[in-house]
Length: 269
Ligand code: BTN
Image 1 (cartoon, rainbow, N blue to C red):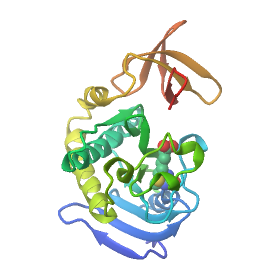
Image 2: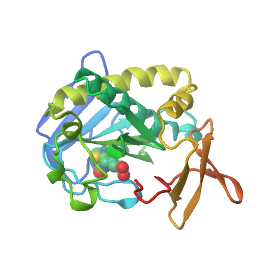
Image 3: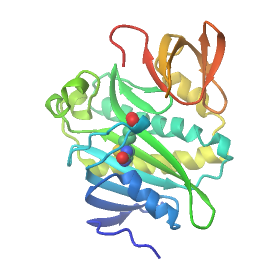
C-alpha cells in the first residue's frame, strides 16, 4: 500500500467515497495525485494543497498558486466511459465549478453570471476565475485513470496577480467584495461533482454538450485558436457530441480537439 506522504490532515465527506489529503505545500497537486493513482489509489481520492510551488496549467504554462488564496486540488477518477469520450469530463468539470460559483453570486445578489470557455475554463465577464487541467494515465495494474486538477482563484485581490494577469484574471473576492472560506467551498464543489458525475455517468454524459453550449462564451463568434504549432481563425459553429469544437474557417469546417480559444479583437482573453 502506497502512503501519500507528509500530508497535514485527512478527511472524508460523509455519504460519498471522497477522501481528501490536505497538504500545506506541494509542487503540484496533479503530480501528487498522479503518483498515487499510478500505484492503485482508488477513484474519488483528492489531493488538496494550500500552496503549490510548481502549479501547472494547460500547454505547460505556470499556474500561480499562492498559499491560502485559492483552491488548488486534484481529483482521481477512473471513468467507466470509452476513452474517446473522456474529453467530456473537461466540459463536465468546468460546468460543475461554474454552477457552484453561480450559486455564490446569487447568494450575495451580485447579478453576475459565470460562463464557461471551451474546453474547461470558467469565466466571470472577460476574466478567468478557474482553470482545469486533465491528465490521463495507466496504473501498475493496467487500469486507466484520469486526474482532474482544478485551480480556483478565491481570495486574491488585484495586487496578488502579476501585472500581465491583472486584467485577465479574477477571484471570488474581486467579484463579490467578500472573503470566502476555503474548506466549505471545497466540500461543496466536491459534493456537487460527485453527485452530478453519478447522474451523468448513468446516461453516458448524453446531455452535457447541450448544457455546456448554453453557458459557453463565444458561440457563433469569430475567434482565434492557438494550437501548439499555429493560430487559426474562424467562427465557432458548435460542439460535436464528444465535446470537440467545430470551427468555420476560410477553408471550410475544421474539427478542433485541443487549443486555446480567444476572441478576435484587440482586447482578447
Ligand atoms: C489552465 O487553465 O491552464 C489549467 C490550470 C489548472 C491549475 C490546477 S491547480 C490544481 C492542479 N495542480 C496543478 O498543478 N494544476 C491544477
